[in-house]
Length: 525
Image 1 (cartoon, rainbow, N blue to C red):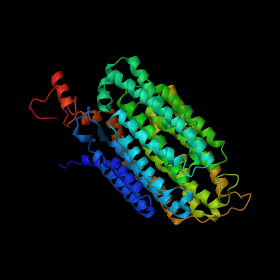
Image 2 (cartoon, rainbow, N blue to C red):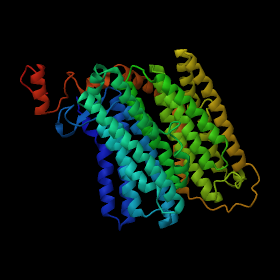
Image 3 (tube, rainbow, N blue to C red):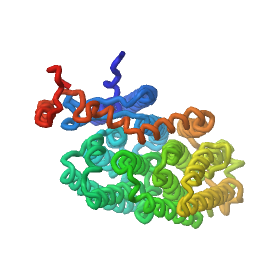
Image 4 (cartoon, one colour):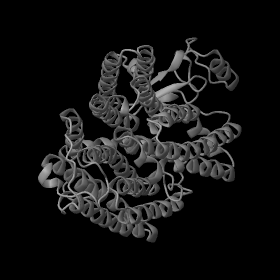
């Protein structure tokens, strides 16, 4: 049987190598564009291959052939492979969009020599966070993508962007400090940061200590995922960045935090000690976020608040603590990444065409730019949960899982989810009517929108529709991913003998000898 584990590091290695190459070619902007495009296309192909391979079981690679838990390992299971595939498609589409915008605007959009290396580093950080098999390496992935995001969010150096970037940096540093302190606590309590070994050791420590560690990790990830009341920074930070940067931030950065919550809650803390707390957090996130969206008169800020609100749906699914809840949450994450990114890209096109994102100043776009009207309408209805779109299917899955649990709090979340969905629809219809149908108070400039900016936006809209057309196979895949989370397949893949991985590590072998679990055939594991 062919060993495909060599594919696992490529989504991290390729963008980092491309970043170095594009930085070296800072005087050759055309070559930079080609390198970035080829690199991220290869990453998307590798991610799709891992998506297929991981369906047969987790694909594990031990860096430097050092056996886990001593060495660092990367793991592509169904959950991480799905997140990696969706994120790589989104990153590639946003890159094409940004290349078209950069071609039209030149240096006004971003210094090319800075943008390409930074964007590729961001891609590597996202991939590293998804694939990491130990807690500290997840932290490294977060820091890589956050360092890149600091640069991207302040591109062009306007006063507004510097202010928003400062807020973003302060909040991100705070969450990183909390995460690092939590990792130190985990290592002090268990002697390891390897996720598979932590899954075996955490149940053996004092329940009070375990609860403190779980709370610290959830607090750190909650800030990164922008759950209430830790979400106030997001609506002020994201809308100020350039359109492609805002789109990739909205689609991916918060979802990396959600992924970390799913991974740690299901693998490290499956007992459900804080599930009720997470349910309250999910309910507050949904309702507060969507009430903020309803009050907005700028479409960028409106979408930023809906982003916060719909993080609540994902936390809802995790908090249910059931396989059905996890299934729906994973499906909803994949749906939301594509739909939210597509909407922000469309709003970028609207701003370019009409010169503003203020709903009080826009109007008449349905007649002047019917393609933009269609591109906005489809993902807007998808986000609002109109059948038969993927947003509806994901929400139905969450509602069914909530009803299945049957507790009063679960029923409250079911009602809250329905109310949030209706208010989402109301907010998006308000934006649709004002931007596309009302008579504008002043004539819009009606600037030309480059075709190469429309194409990747339309491609993402098509991808979001594909999640509906292929909802059966995709939902089946997320069901199997949730099953993998519950049956501890991850642990068995990383630590086949329950002690160490299959690489070579003298220290791990010595520990096995001391524990009396060394292999009896004289071979190295």
